[in-house]
Length: 400
Ligand code: ADP
Image 1 (cartoon, protein in one colour):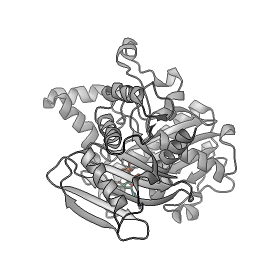
Image 2: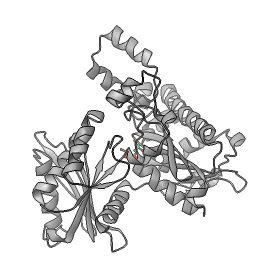
Image 3: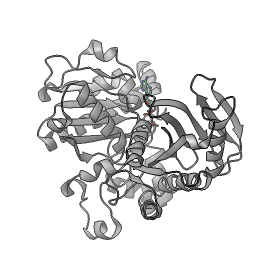
Image 4: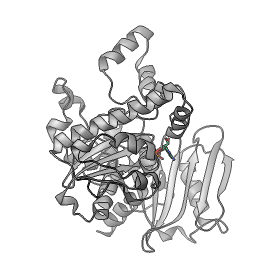
């Protein structure tokens, strides 16, 4: 059964075509960028064939998905003979609000509800919806499934998601913590529990998804009870260009002093902050690690601040769950940066967290247990695969 997974951003579309029967094999994947600009970029790879990259105008998401379909059907670079081979499309949808507690089959009602969530994620949900409507137009009748970044965290208790502001803002505007990266946290939690030979329902897990965006989740016996991202994905950890936790008073003060409007303030905390803002060098950990090694003190400071914030969240989630059995690192940084994993987990023996330095140094982009044999807490590196989760959910839902 072939399933097309789509992750539509405001100016990009990431896609993968899975064959779920043949060992969940990826048949083709790609990325379209600069949608809506004068010249767009198409990157496509079909299994066993050369990568393709070319420039072409991509006026909107429908035009983008049309290009993807043509590439998949292409006699030379394609991987299918007919569109009827694709049995369903699965979409990543950023925000499901309080309505979506699970992935769902898309119909008129779900489209209306995703529309209602646009006010909660004005940067992401409109693009996700455009992708859904484009597929509906181009492949009429194809079953489509929406998989939400927020739904795994809908199990959070109210005391974890209510902010300390007048309650009517929750009632009227739905201002609360939602949490994000749910698909990734759920995926790595399940596979890491298996890796250490435990049942997820018996253990307490902290999952650190450290990528360009970063969040950390407390998972108590399989249930997400807290996530560091909040009403929007800007709260919590320091990220590449996002500030993470910030005194709202400081932001108001800067807005006042610098005469910033809300759009400029939004850009400040989302695009100009994080390790990029602190270091003044780059949002990329590799650049910062190199610069710090060469003696750049602001790069070193950015790394110190980053690691300290993750460490603080780990401590607070151990308190929230009254214990910890399994600590997981995933995302581009979590999977690849032995330096950052070491920095975060150093001096945590009090909590029973001990890392085997040699194993840690040899673990890059692969699943592994990196804790010592006498560590009370298993620490693991687990590669994430959000597209695969979307494909699996899509298959489960259309098969039901
Ligand atoms: P996204 O959130 O966009 O999916 P990723 O999870 O792919 O991002 O993470 C991207 C980040 O991973 C990069 O910005 C970089 O900081 C980090 N990264 C990737 N490889 C390495 C590495 N070898 N060492 C340190 N950091 C790395």
